Structure formats: structure tokens, C-alpha cells
Length: 275
Image (tube, rainbow, N blue to C red):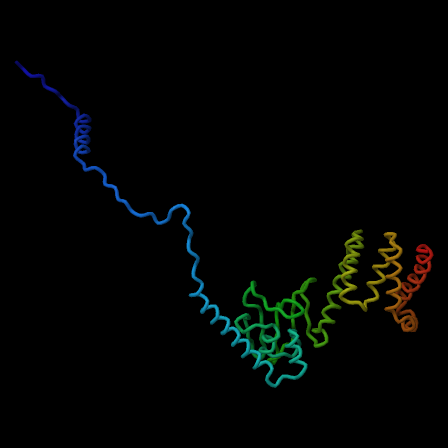
């Protein structure tokens, strides 16, 4: 009796072979490892004791550098310079070490560009700009080893001082006040009276002796029908003016004389309104 012949395709053969190999493969083994963390575990805090000595060392190094700068800056310095350093105020005529001491910085805070007998000091980074009591130091231009021009950034922009009298806090305040007054005048021209009054108020704080700003503020308050405030400003304006001196100058001060006359007239009218 003939036995039937079974023909298998290549696909069937490959499938049977894979099945046989899988059957012969060993069972997968399980490894019981302890978990790194389980629920409820807390990450231990970083031990700061290792970094503490480094921080303390950095502080000591910075203190030593500052002490060294201060010692060089004050050695042989005049009383005025020492007082400026104590106030934290850079002034015209200081040498480099004195500029560093006044800004409480070390040379690493600056980039120094030298050219012949001059030099220019600018901040080394924007994140750590050296400051003195009057503002951020944008640039210090040295001539013959002494500060000749100081550029600071204040609330009203960059202010430049090239004379000793211009580098004082009072002079910087007057310059900032003048900028605010000009801003106020521009705002009046654009009919922004509230903004103009804001600038005049700020200018009067920076420069209390500026009589012009008192008059400008008084006129705005008068127009806004605020008689009590306007009266006070008119009076402050007249008190700040040396009326006899203004009158003696004649036509050269005609505009100011007109303002004085107007202020005097408005005071009379406003006093009647308030009563």
C-alpha cells in the first residue's frame, strides 16, 4: 500500500522550525533585585558641609581683595577723597583704586582699556554693574591716571559729569530735574497734563530750588481747577525767586518778570476763591 506523500511549503517549514526552537528555549529567568526606592522614600538632602568651606574661603578671599583695594585707595588720599569713598561716591580726580573702593568692587568687576596716558573703565558684565550712591557706573574715563569723565545711568537716563561740581549728588539731581522739566514741557505740548504734572512734581523733589518748575506746576493745577494746590505752588514760586534781582535785570528777565506778575495776580484770585 502506497503511503501518501506530504508536501510542505517553505512557509510551513519555516513556521515549524521556529515553533520547535521556541519549544526548546529555556524558560525566562527572574532576577529578584531590591528596588532603588519605594513609595514613601525621601531623597536625602545634599550635605552642605562639603561646600561650606569653599563658600567661606571665597568670602575670605573677596574680603582680603577689598581690604587690599581700600588700603591702596586711601593711602595718601586727601580727606575729601576718603570721605567720598566712605560715602560710596565716585568723584572727579579719583585714581583707579579709589574708583574701585568707592563702588565697593575689585578690578575683576571692570574691563580697562588703556590708550597712552588715558584709560576707559567699563563694567565687565551686565549682571554685576558697579554702582555708587548716585547710580550705575556706565563708564569712567581716566586721564593721567585720574577720573576725568563719569557716566552714570540714573532714572532719567545717562548723566555725564566732567567737572568736580557736576559730579556731586546735588548737581546730578539738578540735571535729572532739568530732564524731567523738558519731558513735562513736551507732555504739555501733547496735551497730557497729568503726565506733565507728574514730571514737574518729580523735578521739584530732585531740585527744590528750581522756581521755574513750581510756576509750571502751579499753572497746570490752576487750569485743572485745583485752587489750593495751585495757590501753594504760586507761593513757593515767589519765595524761590529773588524778586528784586529779577526786576533789576530789566528786559533780560522780562519773561520771568511776567511769570512773577501772573503768579501774584493768581494768588489774590485763588485766595478769594478758597475763602
